[in-house]
Length: 226
Image (cartoon, rainbow, N blue to C red):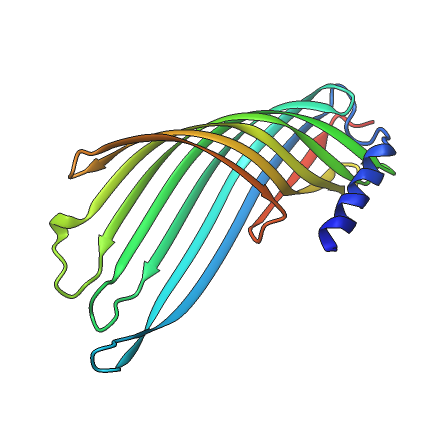
């Protein structure tokens, strides 16, 4: 029901387009910030002696980066963005065994084109295509009491992405705006190499997300508005 109401509101805003801080020649300089955190606890039962223990997993993701765009026409901007993301997942050992810590660092660069549909110069949506390249370094370390460091895995991955983004946009003032991503269609091609195994992997993924639990917010300043 909530998704239906949100879609209805978006359609209403899109039908009532008005010029805001989105005129030809305007520029935006923004800052992206995203953060997610998960803490999962599961009870593991040993069927041989009926003893139990708690398996804990904590996952933290944090990302920052600047973005710049230029309005090549009214309500249409072309821009670039850079981003750094880090993701840490801790699987805490059960009785000293099965522990693991995975750390992923990602560097990303994108170009995008976005169409704005605004209502009352304040609230609306923007949508459009993007292309991006990212490089990630994934370090997987065993935290078992008897772990052998030689078995730790380091994976380097190159990603090429193309897709469509849908954002909700709000102008708090004529010079200051906020945006939140609510939808994304993404095609991804990746290639990776593991150390010390030397294994190579590559593949393709297609994903569709709409109003998921992740928090992705950006703030931007507008230059050149009359």
